[in-house]
Image 1: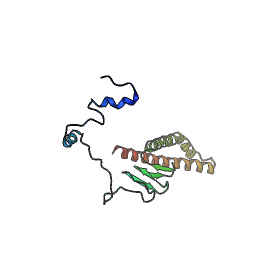
Image 2: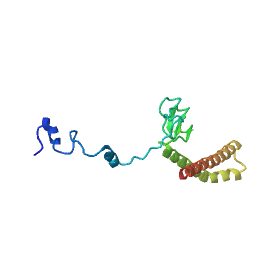
Image 3: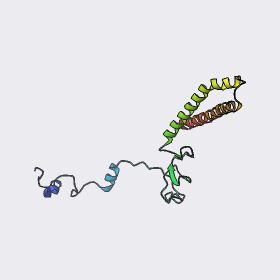
Image 4: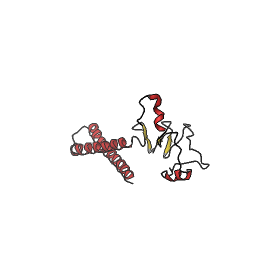
Length: 164
């Protein structure tokens, strides 16, 4: 028999087939359950009593590896830290951009240190230069070296964290 073309007779095509809601299977419930694929248990954190973890401040369910940030007042997935320079938490969704910022800040500070080095040496070699200007140049170069050292160390630390 051909399939009916009218929409009101749509269920009629299931009467003689082995599909649809009318068909009674001859297999037992155990055979049906044995045919099902084995479902692997999903691991998730629970309370000691077996309940779902809730954030005490947000009053929302708390997924695994989530921490509440008191400055942002929200739960952050895989929270690393709250960065005041970015004015946001560094976590799962923006860690890549944070590493990019560290990399470019480190490269820029290295560029400034290397290109300002001849000016720094020239200021130290001249005796007739204004003391205020010499103080400004020497202090700026030393602070840039310190900033470069700190930012590069921070970048290397985060790259080490990423590799482990």
